[in-house]
Length: 293
Image 1 (cartoon, rainbow, N blue to C red):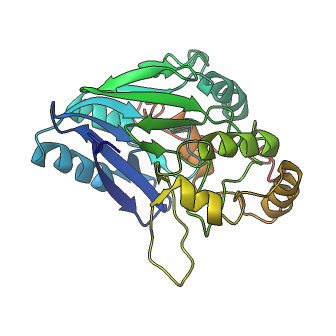
Image 2 (image 1 turned 30 degrees about the vertical axis):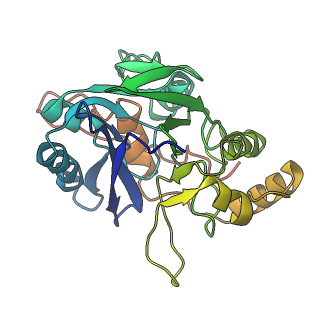
């Protein structure tokens, strides 16, 4: 087996249980950042850039040029730091083309401004399923994995796959499928698509919610997932998974940051346009978001 060309460094945000990644080609020093975080204090309404600044420090320390800022989907549990990273280090902000579907749903929910277009134009690039792109001299592939949301993408890069929220660590399982546009049947098929990759493929997850018996972790393998994932291991049927997922989702709380985060994340990490007083405001729709479907 050939040694991987890419290098990867992970950054865990304990406030949102999110893992961001810097992935780079050491030969060319060209890099991608996956799922960056913009810190947000819900009580004060203030944003800060501590998490994203750690990523920027990594880019600087390793003398990397940022080509891509890759979002796996429009997250419901943290604000995206993509726009801030781009302002500081450049790069194209990219996401799957089905973000248009998500934008259409949430433009209506938030009653967003008339000139917000649900056409994906807020992003620099929209990936199609199976589309390839380059990080320096290393080829990467965008893989559509709907189910958690319609727009979820995974990124296969040189023997590693970055799966976003589709799969978690084996002892945590899988993502919920009860958000608008989510579908447990699609999620199962997306998981099986990822688990059909070579067993030695390294898998990096976007979140970890560890049991008390271990520290946070984010790196596993396809083989480990197929053998031990509590929701998706080999032998669990689609019908069994869907029944489990629907029952479990009905018990889950709405994510704390879902209302502020999605209206920023469908804008590629851009805050809403400032009002005439120069301040940006987030909308909180009352009695509008279904808790469960």
